[in-house]
Amino acid sequence: MKSYQNWKMREDKKKADTGLIGLKNGNIEIKDVSQHLFERKIFRDIPYEDMADAFTNPLNIDTIKVGEKGRKSIRYIGRKATITVNPDNNTITTVWKTGKDKIKKYGDE
Image 1 (cartoon, one colour):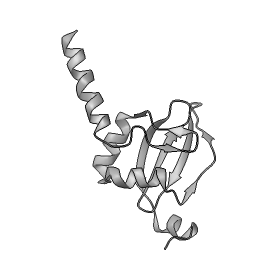
Image 2: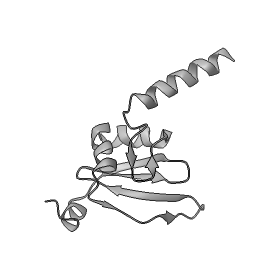
Image 3: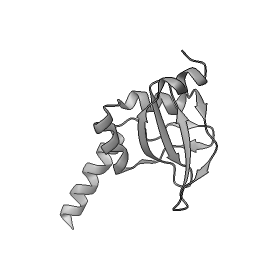
Image 4: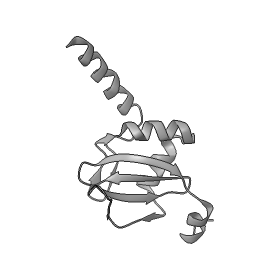
């Protein structure tokens, strides 16, 4: 049991260190970040600050979409990063760099 507790403490610290937990935009408050987000952040070399900016100062917020598996998501398009948030559990699920076409479309170039 102790190894699980140690793992849980490390995971909670890693999530807290992102600076994303507790951010608010409208009625959404970030409560968690997915493991997939960590993997995409590293692979795509996207700073947490760009994710926070996408959430708190988005160029655009898409409508809620429901995926093939029935999971909901909202896309927050920022100047440097785009994130998706599951509105049912307020978890950031993934991230990618915002494309130039989206920046141009939403008028911030």
